[in-house]
Image 1: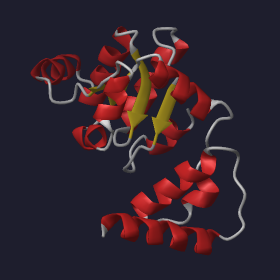
Image 2: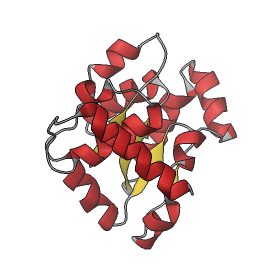
Image 3: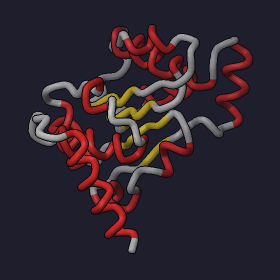
Length: 168
């Protein structure tokens, strides 16, 4: 049964990471990341700000939207649970107008997506799991005062601009 497989997977994760201690709420998140990636290094390298989890809870309970930079990330979010609080998942990546604007301005689509996300005050959580330029542009928008997210999840991929985006 799937629930038994998942339960056993988390038992294995706990056995392998041993007695490592995490702040409240962080352990479940870190173990979920390890489960998703099968990469135990996340137990040592993932960074979660002190109030990040509580900020996320508060934002979700207030009905915020979650912005993602990929449809795949959007697919992994429990939309039914989020909608119970009045929120939804938003991903602008597939919009034709985003592609057109990005081409016209000679910027990445993910940068334009973050600008669109920042324009709606209901968008309070940003989950970036693909594009380093999305994280870089979001950091710029935060510094400019254009958006004040309750939570930013940043796990960009690739080799171009990744180090710069992780400085955020």
